[in-house]
Length: 386
Ligand SMILES: *[C@@H]1O[C@H](CO)[C@@H](O)[C@H](O)[C@H]1NC(C)=O
Ligand SMILES: *[C@@H]1O[C@H](CO)[C@@H](O)[C@H](O)[C@H]1NC(C)=O
Ligand SMILES: *[C@@H]1O[C@H](CO)[C@@H](O)[C@H](O)[C@H]1NC(C)=O
Image (cartoon, rainbow, N blue to C red; front, side):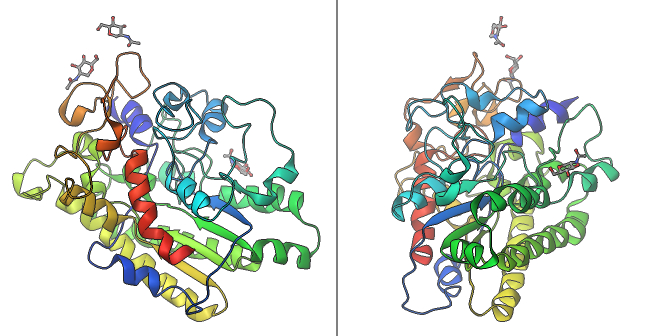
């Protein structure tokens, strides 16, 4: 059954943006003009785009093989697989570096391949609760609609609300005791809420109509993210980064798994699929509307929209200008096939091949980006964060 295996491979990541207006979206979100914020820690929720090493632990709970535990993951930076879905650093790693903070440790560690779990106190400078394959919506949403019938083990029980539950019932009590102590700690922290949505869409494509995805899935995800932000603000969060989704219509697994029969469905210039990108734009517009309302309601809180769509479209549209090779829609690491992507031969498999210069590729193993692409994206986010 194609979906089972393909989803396992395709699932590991997700993101998006507003191509025509990246910087203003970010600038508009800073509530204190001229004020430069400093943070003592980073706490993050999300999926593989933000997961610094939780997925090997979670996949093990389900006995799902996890290709990211093998080389060539981590070869460009770190020098070994760390559980990141990348050849090196993620966007959040570049942001931690720029803010002078340690790399955000995976809460469900131990960091893959490392010895003993860190004591709880080591999470005072931050922790990632993000899990590769995580959805914004609870698993029941997909189960009740029959979107991922058995034997699929997806979606994992690691949705946004489950990650919040881990934060509230386990992480927070290990870090602070009184309300004041917690508010002080979290008030000096930077929270990443996402990206969320990419896996929800990957699980829905081909099973629900794009019209139903727009009218049912998009609003449900945006509302779930809104509620999560409200909950974090109650705990004392004063600065939150909320990324949009990527242009899914450009993602090699989406191009491979859900091809359009009609050539008119593709952007002639980029080769991306128009309708799938349109879902992403719609998601991002709805998310930004929701963030606008939240900013009005919480004037003392900095709610930063991070455009994931725009910088990826920039790389896909002008690869040479940004230092990437022309053949942008192929993955660096994978099996043979169109887009160098083959569901049966994921990156990390003995028969997969890796390109000679990962830094010239945008896509690493599927939906996930190379470290070079992550560096570019992080540079566009940083001005609004630091
Ligand atoms: C999912 O995880 C949450 C939080 O850890 C737990 O309360 C819940 O029982 C789990 N649900 C399932 C179906 O395993
Ligand atoms: C994908 O890999 C499998 C296993 O090696 C192979 O049989 C198949 O032909 C490949 N598909 C394409 C499109 O190359
Ligand atoms: C790699 O490909 C060879 C030749 O097609 C095959 O015999 C072998 O089983 C494959 N290895 C894996 C790990 O799939």
